Amino acid sequence: MSADFLHPTVLDVLQTLSIPHQALTCDPTLADTAQFCEHYGYSPDQSANCLLLGSTKGEPKYACCVVLANCRLDVNKVVRKKLGVRRLSFANPELTKQLTGMELGGVTPPGLPQGLPLWIDSRVMACEKIILGGGNRSSKLLMPPDGLLKLPGAEVVENLAFPIEQN
View (cartoon, rainbow, N blue to C red):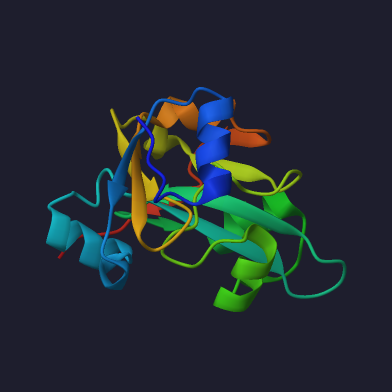
Protein backbone atom coordinates (compact mmCIF):
# COMPACT_ATOMS: atom_id res chain seq x y z
CA MET A 1 0.00 0.00 0.00
CA SER A 2 1.51 3.32 -1.04
CA ALA A 3 0.41 6.90 -0.91
CA ASP A 4 1.38 10.02 -2.80
CA PHE A 5 2.06 11.94 0.42
CA LEU A 6 5.37 10.09 0.84
CA HIS A 7 8.53 11.72 -0.53
CA PRO A 8 8.56 10.78 -4.27
CA THR A 9 12.03 9.18 -4.10
CA VAL A 10 11.03 7.12 -1.07
CA LEU A 11 7.85 5.92 -2.78
CA ASP A 12 9.81 5.01 -5.92
CA VAL A 13 12.36 2.94 -3.95
CA LEU A 14 9.65 1.14 -1.97
CA GLN A 15 7.80 0.22 -5.15
CA THR A 16 10.90 -0.67 -7.20
CA LEU A 17 12.27 -3.00 -4.51
CA SER A 18 8.81 -4.36 -3.57
CA ILE A 19 9.29 -3.45 0.08
CA PRO A 20 6.07 -4.08 2.01
CA HIS A 21 4.91 -1.01 3.91
CA GLN A 22 1.97 1.04 5.04
CA ALA A 23 2.13 4.79 4.48
CA LEU A 24 0.76 6.95 7.29
CA THR A 25 -0.01 10.66 7.31
CA CYS A 26 1.47 12.75 10.08
CA ASP A 27 0.97 16.30 11.30
CA PRO A 28 4.34 17.91 10.40
CA THR A 29 4.46 19.61 13.81
CA LEU A 30 4.36 16.13 15.41
CA ALA A 31 6.97 14.44 13.18
CA ASP A 32 9.69 14.25 15.84
CA THR A 33 9.70 10.80 17.41
CA ALA A 34 8.63 11.59 20.97
CA GLN A 35 5.74 13.82 19.90
CA PHE A 36 4.67 11.39 17.15
CA CYS A 37 4.61 8.41 19.52
CA GLU A 38 2.72 10.27 22.21
CA HIS A 39 0.12 11.74 19.84
CA TYR A 40 -0.45 8.72 17.58
CA GLY A 41 -0.09 5.99 20.21
CA TYR A 42 3.03 4.22 18.91
CA SER A 43 5.71 2.87 21.21
CA PRO A 44 9.33 4.07 21.18
CA ASP A 45 10.11 0.33 21.23
CA GLN A 46 8.99 0.13 17.59
CA SER A 47 9.90 3.63 16.42
CA ALA A 48 13.17 3.79 14.52
CA ASN A 49 15.23 6.92 14.05
CA CYS A 50 17.39 7.38 10.97
CA LEU A 51 20.43 9.43 11.99
CA LEU A 52 23.00 10.92 9.61
CA LEU A 53 26.53 11.35 10.98
CA GLY A 54 29.69 12.66 9.41
CA SER A 55 33.37 13.23 10.03
CA THR A 56 34.35 16.64 11.36
CA LYS A 57 37.92 16.71 10.04
CA GLY A 58 39.68 15.58 6.89
CA GLU A 59 37.89 14.01 3.94
CA PRO A 60 34.12 14.03 4.51
CA LYS A 61 32.74 10.59 5.38
CA TYR A 62 29.09 9.95 6.20
CA ALA A 63 26.90 7.08 7.40
CA CYS A 64 23.24 6.73 8.17
CA CYS A 65 22.33 4.75 11.29
CA VAL A 66 18.95 3.27 12.19
CA VAL A 67 18.25 2.80 15.89
CA LEU A 68 15.13 2.34 17.99
CA ALA A 69 13.87 5.42 19.82
CA ASN A 70 14.39 3.66 23.16
CA CYS A 71 18.13 3.33 22.41
CA ARG A 72 21.10 5.66 22.12
CA LEU A 73 23.49 5.40 19.19
CA ASP A 74 27.02 4.46 20.27
CA VAL A 75 28.68 7.33 18.40
CA ASN A 76 32.10 7.36 20.04
CA LYS A 77 32.90 3.68 20.10
CA VAL A 78 31.00 1.86 17.38
CA VAL A 79 30.13 4.45 14.72
CA ARG A 80 33.39 6.40 14.89
CA LYS A 81 35.50 3.25 14.59
CA LYS A 82 33.32 1.70 11.89
CA LEU A 83 33.47 4.89 9.81
CA GLY A 84 37.24 5.07 10.39
CA VAL A 85 37.38 8.66 11.62
CA ARG A 86 38.78 10.35 14.71
CA ARG A 87 35.85 12.73 15.23
CA LEU A 88 32.31 12.83 14.00
CA SER A 89 29.03 14.55 14.72
CA PHE A 90 25.37 14.44 13.80
CA ALA A 91 24.61 16.25 10.56
CA ASN A 92 22.76 19.54 11.00
CA PRO A 93 19.39 20.10 9.28
CA GLU A 94 20.93 21.91 6.30
CA LEU A 95 23.54 19.22 5.60
CA THR A 96 20.94 16.48 6.10
CA LYS A 97 18.68 18.11 3.51
CA GLN A 98 21.62 18.63 1.13
CA LEU A 99 22.86 15.02 1.34
CA THR A 100 19.54 13.15 1.55
CA GLY A 101 16.95 15.50 0.08
CA MET A 102 14.94 14.93 3.28
CA GLU A 103 14.13 17.01 6.36
CA LEU A 104 14.89 16.04 9.93
CA GLY A 105 11.86 14.26 11.33
CA GLY A 106 11.31 12.53 8.00
CA VAL A 107 14.70 11.03 7.06
CA THR A 108 14.27 7.39 6.11
CA PRO A 109 16.46 4.64 4.65
CA PRO A 110 14.44 4.10 1.45
CA GLY A 111 15.58 6.93 -0.78
CA LEU A 112 19.01 7.59 0.71
CA PRO A 113 21.67 8.40 -1.88
CA GLN A 114 23.70 5.56 -3.41
CA GLY A 115 27.00 4.91 -1.68
CA LEU A 116 25.89 6.14 1.75
CA PRO A 117 26.47 3.33 4.27
CA LEU A 118 23.28 2.26 6.05
CA TRP A 119 23.93 0.66 9.42
CA ILE A 120 20.99 -0.88 11.28
CA ASP A 121 21.16 -1.72 14.97
CA SER A 122 20.40 -5.40 15.51
CA ARG A 123 17.61 -4.49 17.98
CA VAL A 124 15.65 -2.96 15.09
CA MET A 125 15.61 -6.34 13.35
CA ALA A 126 13.98 -7.98 16.39
CA CYS A 127 10.79 -5.92 15.93
CA GLU A 128 7.76 -7.26 14.10
CA LYS A 129 7.19 -3.83 12.48
CA ILE A 130 8.88 -0.46 12.79
CA ILE A 131 7.81 3.14 12.28
CA LEU A 132 10.16 5.29 10.17
CA GLY A 133 10.03 8.68 8.53
CA GLY A 134 8.40 8.90 5.12
CA GLY A 135 11.00 11.20 3.58
CA ASN A 136 9.20 14.33 4.76
CA ARG A 137 7.66 15.60 7.99
CA SER A 138 4.08 14.82 6.88
CA SER A 139 4.40 11.05 6.48
CA LYS A 140 5.65 7.91 8.21
CA LEU A 141 6.22 4.31 7.15
CA LEU A 142 5.08 1.23 9.03
CA MET A 143 7.00 -1.77 7.75
CA PRO A 144 8.74 -4.99 8.70
CA PRO A 145 12.41 -4.25 9.44
CA ASP A 146 13.68 -6.93 7.04
CA GLY A 147 12.57 -4.64 4.21
CA LEU A 148 15.56 -2.47 5.11
CA LEU A 149 17.87 -5.30 4.05
CA LYS A 150 16.72 -4.87 0.44
CA LEU A 151 18.32 -1.41 0.38
CA PRO A 152 21.80 -0.92 -1.13
CA GLY A 153 24.53 -0.65 1.49
CA ALA A 154 22.36 -1.95 4.34
CA GLU A 155 24.21 -3.78 7.09
CA VAL A 156 22.97 -5.01 10.46
CA VAL A 157 25.41 -4.04 13.21
CA GLU A 158 25.41 -5.69 16.64
CA ASN A 159 25.29 -3.16 19.47
CA LEU A 160 25.26 -0.11 17.21
CA ALA A 161 23.13 1.38 19.97
CA PHE A 162 22.42 0.65 23.60
CA PRO A 163 19.13 0.82 25.54
CA ILE A 164 18.36 4.08 27.32
CA GLU A 165 17.87 3.50 31.02
CA GLN A 166 14.27 4.23 31.99
CA ASN A 167 13.75 6.10 35.27
